Amino acid sequence: MYNNFMTIEKNIFKRYVPDFKKLKDYGFKKVNNSFMLETLFKDNLFKAVISINSDGNISGIVYDLENNDEFLPLRVENNQGKFVGEVRAEYENLLENIRDNCFSKKILHISSIKQNNKFDY
Image (cartoon, rainbow, N blue to C red; front, side):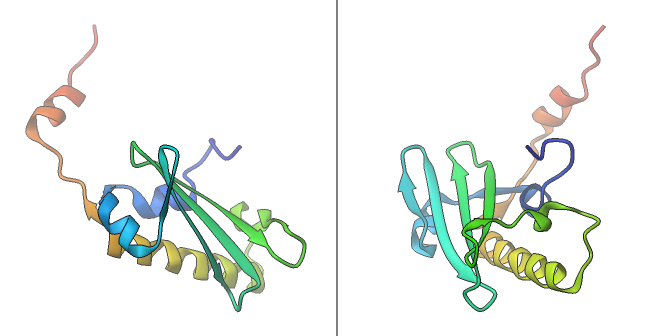
């Protein structure tokens, strides 16, 4: 649905890889081939559902608990209203806390750099 631009999650977690043991210690639950975390934020008015698959890809959905619907204004980049900005900032803080506690920086190996820089003729 949001494939045309970098999502909040992809932006915060780019260049990071998950430590799956730390995810469990943080409170993530293993569900099938993913780790899931549900947490409330913004005075318990919103719920974030964070999912990290076995490849380390992360996605998130934020729900407005008053309406029990996904809070879509969070995903509208040019929506700069004060309330939406506060919700977005708290969600980003939550994601950054997960990143800082459960992820490590990606280290590129010379072989992968060479592989990625090959020309296809």
